[in-house]
Amino acid sequence: MRADEVRDLSRLAGLAASGGARRVQEVHDGIARRAFRPLGAVATPVRRTHDAVAGAVYASVAVGLRTGARAAGAAGALAASGRPLDGTPRAGVALAVLNGAHGDLVAREAPSLALDMTVRVAGRDVPVDRAALAAGFPGASGSVAVFLHGLTENEGAWCFRAVRHHGDRSTTYGSMLQRDLGLTPVYLRYSTGLRIGDNGARLDALLARLVEQWPVPVQDVVLVGHSMGGLVARSALHQARGGTPDAAPWTRLVRDTVTLGTPHLGAPLERGVHALAGALARVPETRPVATLLDTRSAGIRDLRRGTLVADDEPRSGTTPGRRHTWVPLHDGARHFVVLATVPRDPDGRLAHVVGDLLVPPRSACGDTGGDDRLAFPADHVHRLGGLHHFDLLNHPLVYAQLRRWLVDRPEGPRPDAPPG
Image 1 (cartoon, rainbow, N blue to C red):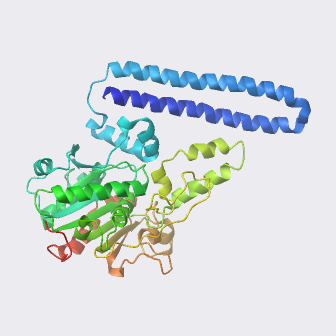
Image 2: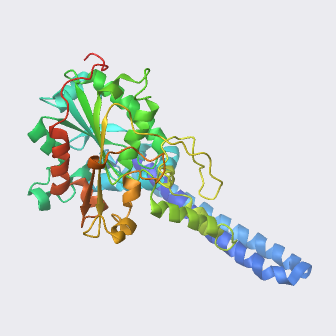
Image 3: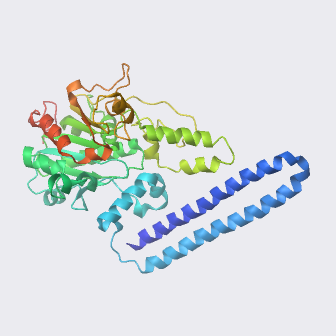
């Protein structure tokens, strides 16, 4: 690791340890208040003494933990190798999980560990300039497929079970689309713990520059998003004013979007955690647990309702909600959905309840049951039974459908597309 990464890791460890001490203190205080309350005023002197002693002890423990972590970080930084932490696949996965779980905290307190939105080739960032892109994408075509991973994932997630399905660990939807249809795959990595709206803004800026700097004129773009990645793609199109007269030029090149298990209407698990945190916050003894639950990242909290606009949601799961902006599908492109259900019959009653274990079918296809449902045509929604959420990352049945949809796609730039 680099020295700054060691120091930031130790800082996060100190924050976590001291925060844990505070949570224990809050539980202790809640129990003590309940124990002293029946005794009334007669117990006030004892209660004050107890509170002072307990407060001093817990404060000392918290300071000691932070100081110890800081010292360990300083010592570790002296022995740092200088190689970046994400230099190995396992460390890259760990960084993706850390950023997904606490991305906003990492960006604020440990910036050397925060992931930027970047183009990735062979485990490395590729600068978005013409020379670097030409070197990173030899033989680039004018048809580009951009892949956006989901929560706590990175670009390596697209290789999920590649050896089992294809006999080759490097085979992905992108490599097969390049082989079969001539699309050039572009894999992005980003911090999934940031607001979806913030990542949408970053994607808007990155795609604008990518189209401008691509080695050959870009004719068309396909956006493929797994889980949260589909929401980020929709957010970027919305913020770039796609489908309007003053839209960003890159949006006019987007011919197709494909979302794989994307919670367009939100994820039940996050709604459950949100409700649980609210319930626990009402009781002093369990309020610290609610505080702990509320340390989950802003990106995770956005999954409660599939929020695409950064100003819509509160920062805490225990505070009142704000308005929720309904974002329709980008006008001018075809939109496709692949959803999975663990039950083998994807149309059965159980499948509608269980879904792929994380996202139910109605959320995956944006079916609100009202006039504001997402306008996916029936033949643009493909349901697969006997698969779970992560199978959608790399499975022969998913690719077969993806290829069927894209093989007949319109060729060349649309009339309103910018010149290359």
